[in-house]
Image 1 (cartoon, rainbow, N blue to C red):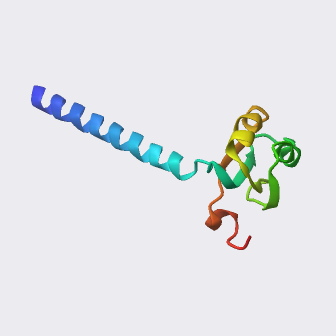
Image 2: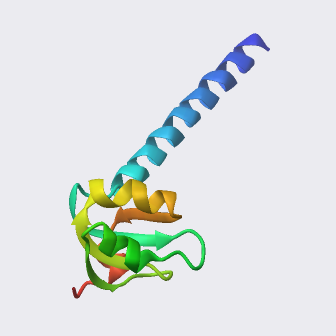
Image 3: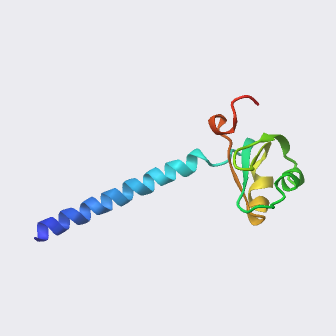
Length: 101
C-alpha cells in the first residue's frame, strides 16, 4: 500500500512538472517581442486599443482576430500601459493574424 501511494505521488509530481513546463513554453510562444509586430487583444469591450497603441508610438498595421489590432512597436512602451487599460499584448503569429502584412 505504501509503495502504491509513493508511486502515485511521484507520478502526480511528474505530471504537474510536465504541465508547468508545457504551460511555460506556451507563454514563451506568445510573449511579445522587444520590438516588432504585436497583437493587441482587448480583454473588455470598449477598450480604446487604437488610441492606446498610437499613444505608445506604435504603427497600426491591420485588424487582428477577436477585435484585436496588429501593430509594430516597442514592447516597453506598450505592454504595461495597455495591460492597465485592459488590453493584452502578445506576439503576432502570422498564422493567427493573416500571413499577408
